[in-house]
Length: 275
Image 1 (cartoon, rainbow, N blue to C red):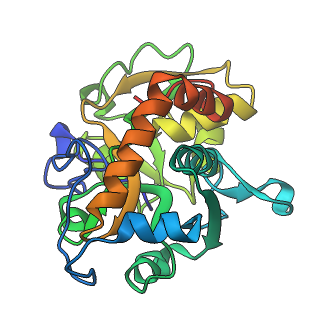
Image 2: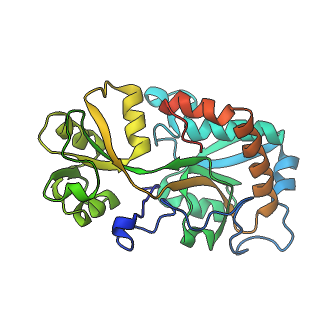
């Protein structure tokens, strides 16, 4: 799971996310350790000389990086953001599809210049890697039927039944909130149970709910409550790649100012998740 959310309600139980409320966000990029990096930072000049920004991504993580109907060119929210960033840098974006379990090893080995795969900024990661400023912000949300008036906060989940994957941090949040958890395999099953009235609610990432609304009739559902903390996702670079991170930060700031990030967000989520 790329996104993880900490919450004031379960601080210490849920992965201290910078996947939610990133304590480690740094303007202009966050410099990690220089392990694996040369003493002279040539991260930007390498990209400029090659004329290519090579980016690692899964390619199977809809709507962030995927192939429509399993075929054709890679597309998605992260892919479009990277292409726009590369254009600002005056280079071409290329993508190396890599399984999540090996993606950071690929970055450390120099197989690509950056990772774009909704990588949450966490204290553990900032100790090893350099990050751009975030280009995605999200919260955790409680999703209920539109006519549900009994759930208005995480506290009101006490005694209610939620559908959650038992291996997710959302299950931890539901349990800590006093809910009775019905185990499911994932979002598709949990939201179906809510729509059918077989459970009272489900907790998940707001990006997941926005994607569902964009591609399905979600008129029978609503968000009942939102976590206070936010997750922040950014491009990840090898530790010490401050020159490249700074250039990407400038590109992201330009793309935010000219409305490009908003446009890409609305294309995939029907809402602006870039700020």
